[in-house]
Amino acid sequence: MTMIPRFRLFVLRTASWGIVVTVLVSVGCQHVIDPTLPANAARLTPPLVYERWWAMVEECAGVTAQLEMVEWYYVPNVNTVSDGQRMTVGYWSPSNNRIVLPGNEVFDGAVVRHEMLHAILRTPRHPRAPFLTTCGGIAACEITPGCIQDAGPPPIVNEGTPSVPPSALRVTSTITPLQPASSIDGGFFTYTIFVQNPADHAVVATLGPHPGATPVAYPYAVRSATRAYLSEILALDPSMTYFTAGETKQQVFDFAIGPSGSAPFSNVFGRGNRGIALPYGTYTFQGGFGDNPAPDISVDLHQ
Image (cartoon, rainbow, N blue to C red; front, top):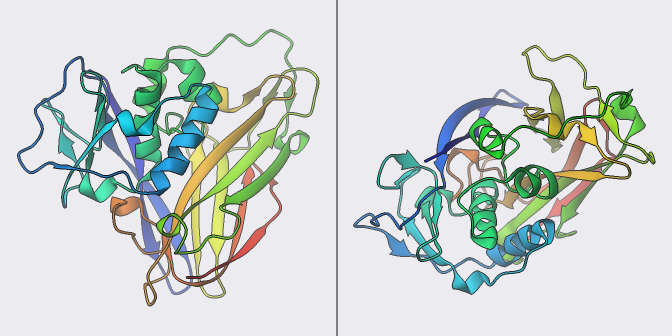
């Protein structure tokens, strides 16, 4: 059984800045038969936003499946669930096509889409092509060393493939839906950074130095008039810096509109400690690839 560590984000606040520290926890995915459900597990009716997340995974996987065929369960008021052997933050099991989530993670897009990809592909493994290539940045394999290891070694890069700086790539971003509102998908929305290789040949992007051993692939910030939330995705796998001719990669970040009066950059119900609930107001989203920034996006979040 493979356990997949994933990043959990914590916001540390000063008077005007939110700074993110990352630690690792585990996600379990592989089961030949369905583990016994916890005694207090309850059936979960998929929230409306699951339809959008499911469509995202279908598109990147190139496979269609029926969301309603998945058995969804959650365990209330916990951050992890037992898969019968250890505690995890969610798992899919093939016998009954079942996904079980901790109650505090049912709106964690990275966790949910990861398990959706297992269900859509009908495999407990992490084949490299869908998890790190076509669905890279969507299903959270690229930030989890265990998933990367399970996917196997990356393809061999041809000798002579040119190395280029991030500035040689086209970096854009978008927010989905274009005008988020608490009345749409419960207020959940995504900020996605796209990186395209415009060349007619493969390239390897050379990312700048980092205080640690692993360079930053996707830095981003969300700023209001008085606060800022900062985070980043590290280039843990070579697939994140290798681009085939004309290839576009993407990295998805999940957000939610918080209730009126909530603290800026606070946790949101159902996303454990990863939650980012933004109260109504105007925000600027700034992201990029390495040191190549995407154009800023300003959005007014409202009811």
